[in-house]
Image (cartoon, rainbow, N blue to C red; front, side, top):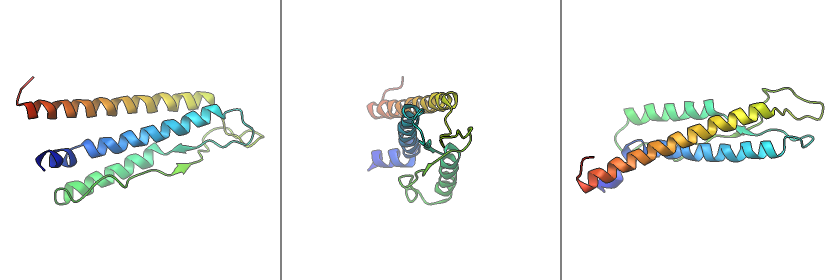
Length: 133
């Protein structure tokens, strides 16, 4: 019970949702790269801005609510068809440079979240072992 409360009241649920988001976004971006030259293919992506706004709103709600009553499990993002690039005659809005940039940013976010989770669990393990590092 004590450990469960420590895990669920901290940032672990928030980081877990971010990890799920970056994983799902990576799959979509990889699919976009594979199909970049497929005629009529429309890019798919998850909106980072919308996801971050949902997380921020939920975090504010959690801070105002009693402990353990607000979670992050139901936060997700809807698949969108971005229209930020040039639309070609075949209906494709491809831009390999943009896709690679999005992929690199997503990978950095993913790695950062993993590192934050690793650090948090390392500190928890240290506390459970009653040793200070």
